Length: 162
View 1: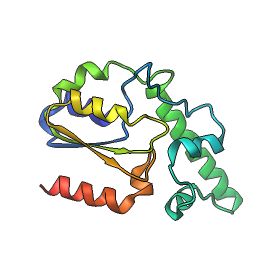
View 2: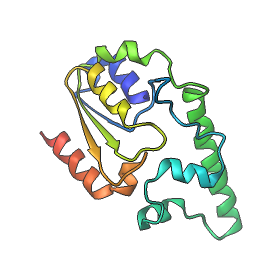
View 3: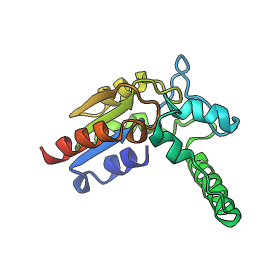
View 4: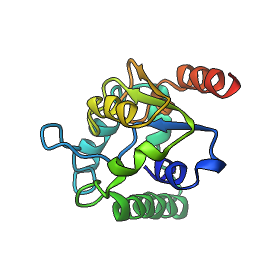
């Protein structure tokens, strides 16, 4: 969402834009799940299609040493608190009206099994951004760059190279 806002505002500074499971739009018929006030177990289910994957387990792993564990908890809380400023209570801040201003070639990558932000939002980003296209990443939830790192990396490299 922040990258889309930047690209819409500073059009001459952005040649290529990648949005991965972006927020910033809202549909009453396909609401974005509330991930700020759910249990850690529910959050994992919202973010990942397959929490048993080694990549996901590594991302979710917490340090065993007490000081490092405390620091990791504070970091995760800080990240959630920071994003909540942009997306709570509803992540609609008028971005829909500004997407038409984006001139950058845009790739919208989306986890096909995203339980947080429904995949239908990818189509809307593509419809509203000139020169945009979407790629659905199978076997991935809201964080395809973690669950399907190799595939996402290949798509990104190809898009940025061309």
